[in-house]
Amino acid sequence: MWELLARSLEASTIFLFAALGELINQRAGVLNVGLEGLMLFGGTTAFITAQATGSYPLGFVAGLAIGGLLGLAHGFFSITLRGDQVVSGMGLWILSFGLTTYLGNPHTGPLGLGRIASFFGLSPFFVLGVALVGITWFLLFRTTQGLAIRSVGENPAAAEGSGISVTAVRYVCVLCGGVLAGLSGAAYTLSYNPVWNYNFLMGWGFVSLALVFFSMWNPWILLAGASLFGIMWQLSLSPELVLPGVLSRYVWRMVPFAITIPILSVISTPWFRRRWGLARPEALGRPYEKS
Image (cartoon, rainbow, N blue to C red; front, side, top):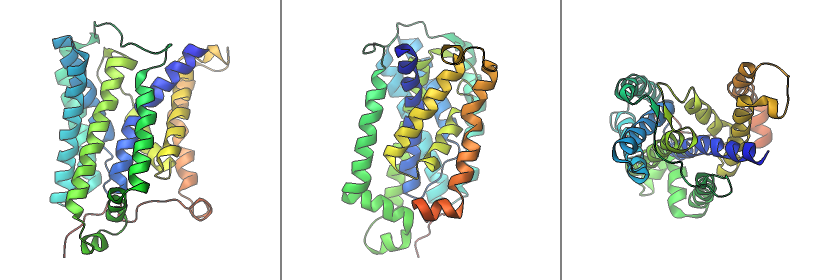
């Protein structure tokens, strides 16, 4: 049972890294629906680099770097060119899906390196994820930099009028979001499941995106949501450990994805917004042009 819980928490870390980066993006008013594309590129680049060099650190550095570059690319289209953020994000996802399939195909198969050390079976990345949640919460709600980020996401014109550079803040946030998405993909291919295959994420990025809305843009609620989805995903792989003989494992694998639909439907209702104060950034997804 401990092994199941440890693997569940490691799975939750994949969701957490990507969703935490997207939460920072969205708090600054930038929406990236192509989150899975950044994770695919980060994971593929990390896998190829680690396999070629035999070095886990170099693999992670490569994954973080490509995630940051793609985050900046999304920022260029969304912030500088003031394009449609949904179109830009989907374009990145389509590009990543095709290009990672082409680049990663010769490397299909296991990584071939020893497993990353764990603490009594618990991945060190889960500890890192919890630490990043605490740091993000403190940054957003207890620092002037966090106030600037939230101001840019709520009312960019007022933020600009108070001396905050909307463009600079948003670029820093999309860079951080991209790096965390790259880390998420790298953690998947180098630690959680070190075997490369095309479209290895199978929708994890879109679940991570949904988790941001589920969390009401609060890092601690995001941690709880990511943990819940990690447990559900791991149970879907081995349901016989808890519920032997109850439904097919393929039905269980559908549950983490299907459950996002009612969750998003409920939190989108006016009642939920009034009752729980859904903190959706007012300027989310809207380009800003300095007047």
